[in-house]
Picture 1 (cartoon, one colour):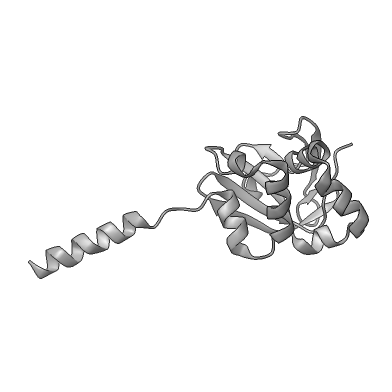
Picture 2 (cartoon, one colour):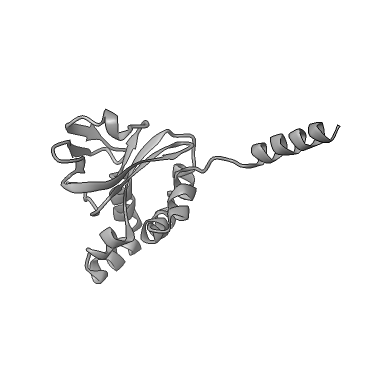
Length: 150
């Protein structure tokens, strides 16, 4: 009986552990505070917590720090422009690093990112510094720069 109770308790605790969506995964990583703030300002948190799947090329706080403060503040204050920039970092579907092919890929924003595969994966010239961070509704690839729609 004790074994059964212990097994039942383990099964219930396993059910209680839920996979994290893209937003929760990024927040837990600790290097995406600016991205999380930007997603909130743009009203995109619920979208990226949605079913997906999504592939997100996520700029780190260090990547956002490359943008002059006044320019970043202006971007964060302009919801339409911020939404365009953020959705330019998102591709529909779940694309793992091994499946990336050089060329153009359509973004949620509507524009096209240029992916490169020579010497590692690049996205409009930004380097993927960490790939394949799995979330229950997609995947995150960490990039070293913020990419802007043309």
